Each structure stands twice: as C-alpha cells, then as structure tokens.
Amino acid sequence: MSVTNSTKALIGLLLAGSVGVIIFLFVHLSSDPSKPISIGSKKAEACTKGQRDCLPDVNYVDTTGKAYTPAELAGKVVIVNFWATWCRPCQKEIPDLSKMYEHYKDRGVVMLGVMTDQPDNNQLLNFQSDFEMSYPVVRSNSDILVSYNYPDALPTTFVFDRGGKQVYSHVGPLREDSLKQILEPLVAQN
Image 1 (cartoon, rainbow, N blue to C red):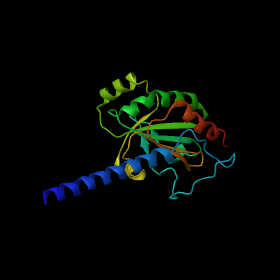
Image 2 (cartoon, rainbow, N blue to C red):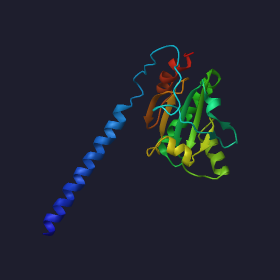
Image 3 (cartoon, rainbow, N blue to C red):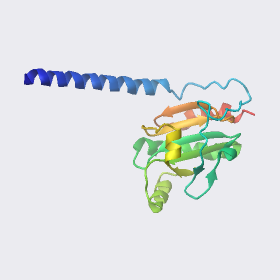
Image 4 (tube, rainbow, N blue to C red):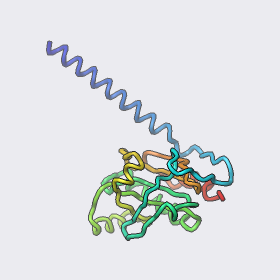
C-alpha cells in the first residue's frame, strides 16, 4: 500500500508542478511589453467611476507626505508599480523606471511605487539611494491592495491612460525601452 500512496503523491506533485508551469507561462506570455499597445484615438475617454479596469478611486500618500488624490491624478498618465525592497527583479527595474519617470514627469506622467514590505524610513532612504530611485514611494495599505486585488507577484505594474482607463498591466520587471513604447502614445493623448 505504501508504494501506491507514494505513487499517487508523486503523480499529484507532477500534476501540480505542470499546472504551475502552465500558469507561469500564460502570465508571462500574455503580457509582452514588446507588443505595442493600441490606444484607439488621440483622445482618452474618461473612465466611469466603478467601471472595470479604471484607476481605483483611492488616495495614495507617498513617504514624504504628499497625497495623490483621484482629482489630482485625473487627466494624467498613471503608472502604479507594486514592489518590495527584498525583490531582486524589482531592484533590477528601478533604475529604468526612474529614468522613465524623470523623462516623462513634466509631460503629465505620474509614477507611484507601491511598496509592499515595511522597512523603516532610514532603510528606505538608503535603498532609494542605492538603487537610484527617483519616483514617489507609497507604503501599501488595505485600500490600495484591495483595489488592485492583492498583486501576489512582484513586481507588478499597471498603466492607466489620461482618461483613467487601464491600458496595460505586466508581471515582472519592465525595461526602459519597453516602458517608452507604452508611454509615448499615452503622453500624446489629449
């Protein structure tokens, strides 16, 4: 009997592993940042509050105390990036995100790094310096996490057009050139 039970356990483990690989491949292949996004028109249409794929109606407060309210974010291209200080892929993408933030911040782009871990303020300042992080950092809270369905993979990035409509999401690190392809048509919107 023990051979049968161990065989069943091995088969179950193999099936679970196969399903995990399939899910991983689906997620990574379905959000290819090298594919250009389609905007549809030169004008961003306003997303109706509560509609699916709209910028969540939450307040973001960065670590300096600056609040980013829904009213303040209206009419801007908004990037929300979930990350953690311990996350190696997050660390890899931060310099590229910072370059894009510096390049686009005066063109109506707001980038918010939503931090999911809880380093103290000194640890965070050291981290930001070490990784050349220039965009605002927001400590996650239950309102933000619920609004984004608790992203469980890090980094995870959401991009919203000037009308507040989600036009792109990606699990995994983003590179500078990929983000530029995404942002160029969005900043050109009226």
